[in-house]
Each structure stands twice: as C-alpha cells, then as structure tokens.
Image 1 (tube, helix red, strand yellow):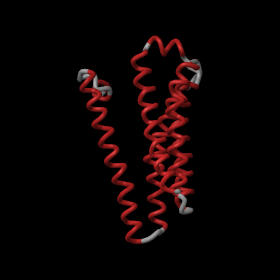
Image 2 (spheres, rainbow, N blue to C red):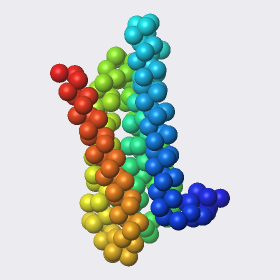
Image 3 (tube, one colour):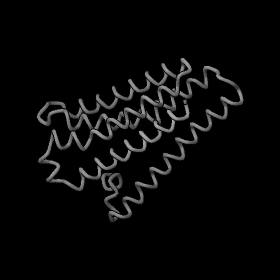
Length: 176
C-alpha cells in the first residue's frame, strides 16, 4: 500500500499526471455540489435544508483544505522533540476542520453562506502562503536537505492559496 499511496510504481511525470487527475476529479465533484444546491435553492426557495447543505459544502470544499494546510503548518511549528508529536499534528487537523465546519454551519444557517465562503477561502490563502515562510523560519536546514520535497509541498500550498484567493476575489466582486 505504501508504494501505491505514494505512486512509487510510476516515474515522476506519471505521478504528477495521477495527481492532476485527482485534482480535476475533486474539482468536478466540488463544483457539482455547489451547482446542485444552487439549482435546488432556485427551485424551492431558501429552506433550512438548503442552508445546511450550503454550510456542509463550505465545510468540505474550503474547510477541508484549510485543515490540511493547518496540519502542514502544525508540522512545521510543533517541535520535533515533543513526545506525541503525531497526535498534536492530527489534533491540529481535526480541530481546524471542526472549527471550519462550525463556522460554516453557523453562517449558513443564518443565511450568510457567502461570508463563510469568503472567510474560509481567505484562511486557505493565508495558510497556503505561509508554508514557504514557515519552512524558512522553522527548519531552514531541512529545506536545503530535501529541496525537491519542500518545493513541491510549498508550491502546492502556494498554488492552493492563489486559487482560493482568486475565488474569494470573484465572490467579493459578485457581492457588490
């Protein structure tokens, strides 16, 4: 399973192709969730079930990436010598996701899902953009020993940040 999970059975170009295929599949499902709720809301009005679905969409589509990036930031901030470090990192992930979900549900049930989208996309942008900075501040030696790995992870975090901030910008322009 280890080789399959990390795609060690394939050359690097094919691994990136698998990764991009997974990202595209995820984008199709995420956009489908949003479009499904928007269509149902137009047909049936603003029921509490649609607001709940809006909140769950925000919690999954924006909150999960925020939690993943919080996990990566925690990986850089939690001291390597700390006993139970893995538990701290896992706790950071689940706590961040739970807080994102609570925030999204609270805002959506109040009819303010757009605010939850903007806030959580902004959080994804902040956390993604902070990864390279945290790498340089917290573990500069590790950055130079495994530059390819750190550049790939930091690059994906920065890419997620740019995409999230672009989506947030588009949402803000829609509101005006």
